[in-house]
Image (cartoon, rainbow, N blue to C red; front, top):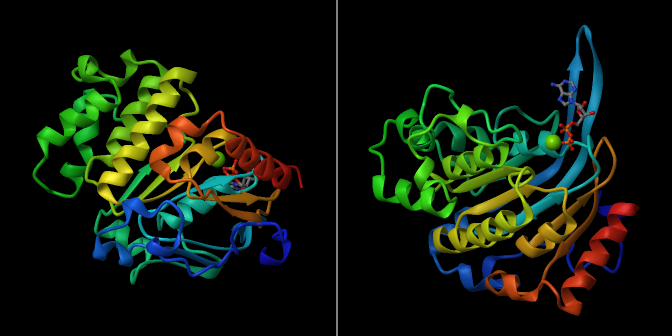
Length: 285
Ligand SMILES: Nc1ncnc2c1ncn2[C@@H]1O[C@H](COP(=O)(O)OP(=O)(O)O)[C@@H](O)[C@H]1O
Ligand SMILES: [Mg+2]
């Protein structure tokens, strides 16, 4: 909740930041991105009801993610991160509050197939090859497949040589990479990633972290991701949202001031460690 946000934070939960007004604005040049702000307005969510016990998962969560920016949700296991992401994907409606993306709703955006989503579980189609799994969003949207982009994506996630294999032939980390490529296939306006790098080894993870930043900068996609790793959140995000235990409320909204494009080089700097320390302290409560 906003009231929980320590005074030391670099941002307020509902700062009406524009791309030009936020740090690291080099990715924000397209006017149409002004329409791509994700607004989470005092959103609460409860599972169950009726014959099932009510589980309060999200409590008055309130923050904004300016167009073309990357937000990272960090919080304890089971606090409601995936629930928030599913709400942002329009998979279900908040019990209270409202989510919007530019002038539209997540459900509408999803109907128009402009949301890319990589779930915690990659959920690949077993009978489709890697390439055909990545192409799936084009088929679902009845759009012509952008073959050159699919091949580029396969190369980015390091799966060119595996493109004709089936998911069962891949390791967990490789499946996650297919899922990430699939989420990016149609260059969505809103990208939602649920611990997309969890099953990857450290080197692959670092490489893909930086590739993701490169792709997002090139496409101007607004991206909200869930990660367990404070380092990863600070490396990737323009805005880190620290959540409390379930039902999750916002503990801190922290804007990382360095430009995203320079993050790869900044990992060992005092500033980077300071950002991590601040986020960790909020996480610890
Ligand atoms: N379909 C569901 N029905 C009832 N409770 C659920 C359901 N999905 C998740 N929950 C509960 O909501 C809480 C938050 O879950 P989740 O959003 O998956 O947390 P996180 O992603 O932070 O680990 C958990 O206590 C979980 O058990
Ligand atoms: Mg989760």
